[in-house]
Image 1 (cartoon, rainbow, N blue to C red):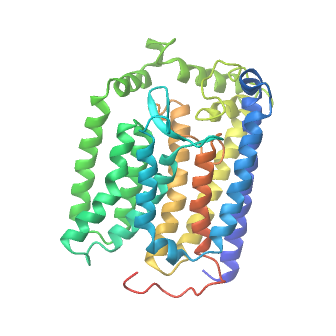
Image 2 (image 1 turned 90 degrees about the vertical axis):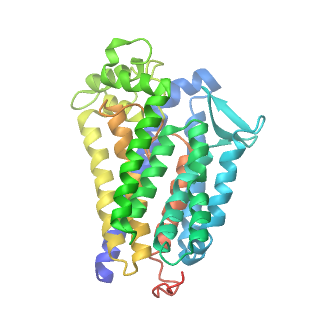
Length: 372
């Protein structure tokens, strides 16, 4: 790919990213102002918090895009250990915050953060490094690095946060697939992982309940099936052109997580099929331009990481949309750039900042040394 094509793809990518962020801000305000007024006394409360996080996210992208990717790549195992430690802190009383039986947040006083959002991406880059160096490490080093890589996944299960665990594990599998890891070992790893994750799914009663609700939400319409049924009603009310911005009924305390995990339903209700189509088109443009940029990189490590960046964000978007549409069992995953959530937004910003750093001309773009 020549410089002109790369510049064109970069512009499309940036335009799509900005469009998604602005789309998200508009829908967060529309879906949250009634709840914010009742809960916090100000209809702008949630919107302003998200706007602040957007500002810091832009700063993070700008700073990291000018940094050297090689530095972060070499430091990824200590960074991954740091984020793992933050996940561990969620289990400590007074520091960790438990909501609905899950200990996923840290109390910073002025706000809370969800360390799992950052581990999700540190695991991604750690996996790239682990599998690209697998053949040159000693057996002792492999065990040590593997322990660091997989340690936070156990903590995510204990929180419990099966959705984040599932996404982290899929990122690791994808990184393994893109590397030179022996194929026969990879397929064995994949098969055993499917068996293990299926076992984890059925061992927890609440996960089985979610699965049963996914198969037949109308069997328990006032309890386990309530959220997805309300989501269906939102899409049905929206029809083709939507009920109009601000005219959602479901956000009026019917649909739980209306401005977070299930904001896609509010989009379908207020903007209809047209709005849903535009949002999906934006994500497709994000994916297509991002993958083209990733494939233009000559170095395999950088290219693999760039593919994973775009892939994991789009995969989470597909999972969220699938859940909200009733095509997948309910998981606690938000819609990237659209749903409310400062931790998710900042984590995405850090990841995209590293992605942009791969294309920065300020630094020498030499091929990595073999030991990197």
